[in-house]
Amino acid sequence: MELGDHLRQARELAKLSQTQVKNLTGINNKSISNYEHNISLPDPHTLKTLADLYDVSLDWLITGGERIVQNSSEQLLPIADDDFELLAKLLSLSPQKRTAIEILLTDHMDFNAPTATDKTKAPAK
Image 1 (tube, helix red, strand yellow):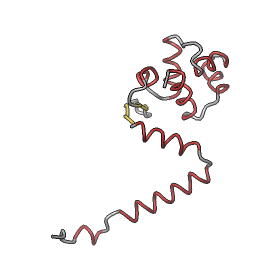
Image 2 (image 1 turned 90 degrees about the horizontal axis):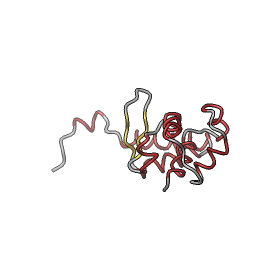
Image 3 (image 1 turned 120 degrees about the vertical axis):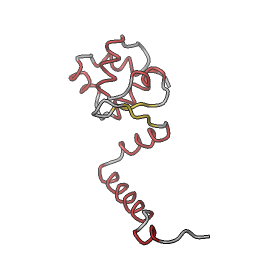
Image 4 (image 1 turned 30 degrees about the vertical axis):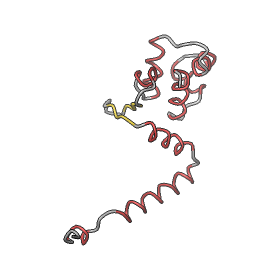
């Protein structure tokens, strides 16, 4: 993947349209489109602005290495490629489908969680 692909993916995961990015940053739609289609490259200041807006690291946008997503406390959290792709798929689902998956995962985690009686049982030999 190239820089433009990372910019597009980060924007989509941030659930922003190109018009919303324009309104939030002042970068015109044509430039955003050109960046995302690898037609032109953003200058360093613009790249930093987009990384901050999308809440991703400059390193990930540029190198495509391990994805780093910033959380609200400004600490960086590494996310494996497979997990990032799964998250992207999950975020693209309708709210109803996301809720259904959340219910399935919660039920699965509850089903597999050790109970109080499991914790007191002696280990099998």
